[in-house]
Image (cartoon, rainbow, N blue to C red; front, side, top):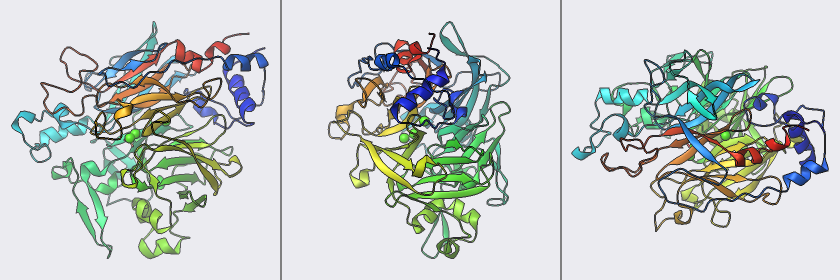
Length: 560
Ligand code: FEO
Ligand code: CA
Ligand code: CA
Ligand code: CA
């Protein structure tokens, strides 16, 4: 029987559920399957092989190392402060990664986007901890400038040679986007007097568009330039940030908290106002048959919400309607000033509704969720999976994964059903799910985000789980539905940004904030990645090996 990857994945979906729905644009970037493939095949021989995959998971560990299950290896591709060109170096705290090959026929040469979410001033701006000064009150403008340079994102050309991915030094495509890069607003009205704003920061997770550009999402934006808050009479005041950048740069908070799109080849960027302003974890797009797009995004804050934008024009992230989820009644509620009297009463126009999306969502009765983080579309069922990390205030320490079934599998439906797919906790072996990624066979990979200050503490809820980790839930075979730990992070670190290469043979992964709890640079809590200087460095790694290829069923695709 003849198989190629697309036919095979379609077959998997058909065998499992009946329809496969992922848009073709995700296939070429390594994020699995093709919904439109009609030429389906089946084979009992293949199904038998799928049932025979034993995976030996890791036990929880508190070792200061990136540990991997048998059958996996890693190498570091790029680390904080590495030169990427004559002018630029790689930023701090790498999170979301996204790889786009130049040519779909050659999956080993392309552009890697990496988010740089925030900085630890002790490492980045030379704050001297021995002086026992508070970095938030004793920083100079020069120190803040260094911090502003180290957030945003990096574009680096990477190539795989002899099994190893390396940055192509000084490639003309290598560049930085920082908290000082001018960025256009994709909106007809200026915000706080500007249509071009300065910089992006708080870039947590992201996504990819059908037209092959990167999406990078501004999450905890209020940490850098604060927030405008309103009292009961709707009078605004400024709430200070924790990092204190506004002491040197008086940029309006309203310029941050958006989804930002970056052109991989030019580096030009725009902020998409129509998707709303809140602590965006990610932005996950689906392209409808008529080329309109649906964009899902969660607000990673306790008791905030899940949103989706449905465009009214092909390929637009500006024309359309933003909705917020009422998960109890299964309704998408339009955040539309024109048609919602309650919003007209409170806000002066649609721009204000989008800037103050959280308040608008609450006015309409959106459901409070426990920190909605990453979102992915299941290639086997078409359902939308959402990580709910935790909510200490509601005694939800371990979080869960939410499953959304859109009515009739239509992504532009305005009704849906919501279920809890899996809860965190000792019985399932994981806590605090954050980033999600489906592989080509529909296995669900995810990372955990237990807070560094609470991990490995005897009196806390996370002791049993030890270090943050990478897990997989197989969707086939004897291990189906089990949670298996495949990687364990260095001390204080979080694994983020899982993204498969187009050939399914590499998992790109960020190791973020190793040694985050360090109080003295001479004595850091982690030494990973074990450089001579002993300083822990956030880095992007490539995970390869037999196990990853088996999980992706690549051995079944090679030939027959
Ligand atoms: Fe930056 Fe929601 O994690
Ligand atoms: Ca995250
Ligand atoms: Ca993801
Ligand atoms: Ca997180």
